[in-house]
Amino acid sequence: PTNSLSLSLSLSLSSSSLSHRIQRLKPTTEQSHFTTPKKKKKTFNLYFLLNPTLCKKISVCSIPISLHVISLSFSLSPQKMDVWSPSVAMDDEFEKLLIRMNPPRVTVDNASSRKATLIKVDSANKHGSLLEVVQVLTDLDLITRRAYISSDGEWFMDVFHVTDQNGNKLSEDDVADRIQQVKSIRSVGLVQSADENTTIELTGRDRPGLLSEVFAVLADLKCNVAAAEVWTHNSRMASVVYITDEATGAPIDDPDRLGKIKQLLLYVLKGDRDRRSANTAVSVGSTHKDRRLHQMMYADRDYDVEEDVEEENGNRPLVTVENCLEKGYTVVNLRCGDRPKLLFDTVCTLTDMQYVVYHATIIAEGPEAYQEYYIRHIDGSPISSEAERQRVINCLEAAIKRRTSEGIRLELCCEDRVGLLSDVTRIFRENGLAVSRAEVTTRGDQAVNAFYVTDASGHPSVKTETIEAVRKEIGLAVLRVKEEAYSSSPPAQEHGKFSLGNLFRTRSEKFLYNLGLIKSCT
Image 1 (cartoon, rainbow, N blue to C red):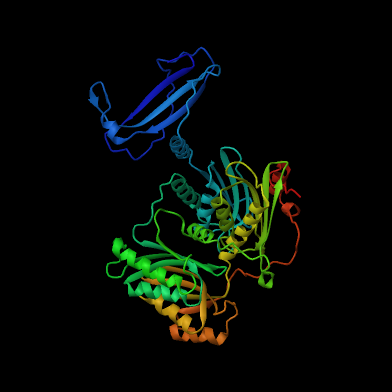
Image 2 (image 1 turned 90 degrees about the vertical axis):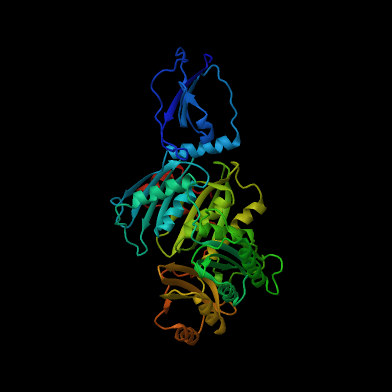
């Protein structure tokens, strides 16, 4: 020990197996034998998780012990400090430990607003923290009407004005606990992939009847589809399908069988025109399904559009990207028709493009949604080229349109059985219908599915006679036409720059505006 460095070692002993857990340890208040408290010092606390094999070799007073957690506190003199350069892996583990020791704090306020419930989230900041919070709110089927986000420094503070699917304030007393529990689990990487299904990922060129062919192949290979999500955009298709063995109901893990499934599905995806870019894969890890679909479409470059192609009916989101030189941010303004999960789609895209959202304002209280983001690249720099600026615009537009509901929504609710999806999609194809998006779920022994169908050329207008013919063949009682609560009609045409500054009406908005957190740079 030197005058500039003092060490204090605290051992946590346990007879039970704690090698996979980290307990929060309070720093000791006693002085170390090595401490020389003559100069003013700064104290830090570090927590290390030791390898269980190493723990068995450690003993104190010749008594073998199981040492799992070491709390190491050290003091550094401001005049003389030993320099230690930790590895990248150590930095990553230390960041996870800090998040474990500082779990997110969630408060629910039902009194401040008559129209919405305010959910306030404070937590240690890391790349992707905002996405994790938005993902939790989305998975709880909450609709975000307004949001104010600030994450400068090592901490982020977010306020969300949310309602349920019917536009009502929340009445559940445990919503804060549910959000905090899910957020805590995800932020430290403890979410494990579900082991009851095998996940197949598919990407390829979209065409009429493709989904019918995919489900037919799976049925022929004795695979039961437990759940699936299908997106189409810009003539491309991406799908995540969860399958089990038809006979046992267990996941399929035989390499030879999986190889055959992938080979036949790839043959279907390629067809006659997509020899290069079609892809099938058995997914691993615990990536959120919707986020994975965005990643797959992004990797498939569905955002590439020809400049001379005009959007039909003017149904194109308005996205502007400008640099704010005064603050060192890039300001992204977005305006489009509102719909569920819109906030998740935009935040997910910015995060996976390696941008950090420092401040944001979200307003979605009518048919339109307005979003304003202050972003930098993960390396701390704003957008630096016209090509990068245009790519951000194209990617955000694509992210919004991937989930935009085009076509008529048909809801299927009936007893689940093997081959159900193959039969239903075959009937769609035989009647000249194409599936633009699909959500397949199973609840107990019931199949609860939703299909968005268009005509074979992709136009959302389908003859009523065609829909009724399909319903009669499948069953009028089990297949129903659902009127969408959220219209996908284009926003009012208004070109040029826009800012959220003229929309500030409430005290909280004016307060954030005065702080400079949500000021638009025009």
